[in-house]
Length: 110
Image (cartoon, rainbow, N blue to C red; front, side, top):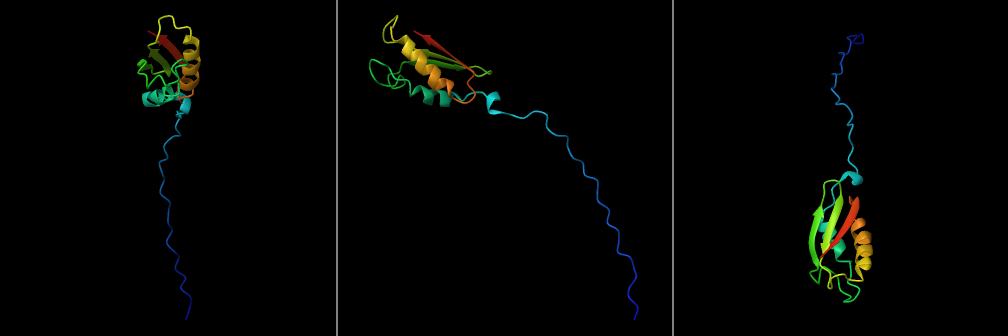
């Protein structure tokens, strides 16, 4: 008996359409900060006289988050011209500024 000399069928690969590589990659720096994360960060801002979080004392009046990551926080101080405003400014800068996506922090007082 002679070996079978038929050729195996040729399989041709189909041409695949590969989409072009993405030119835009999202990064943490490009994301808008989450308002809820900012409110949680404000829980760590402590009134230096009352030794309680400004959120517990209902001193936070407004939080505005811009599309570019700039955050504006409005806090009602216990006394007009409060001499401890610098302490609030430092704490808000430190805690809110640490939230991913925040590019700048402005503290407004009432």
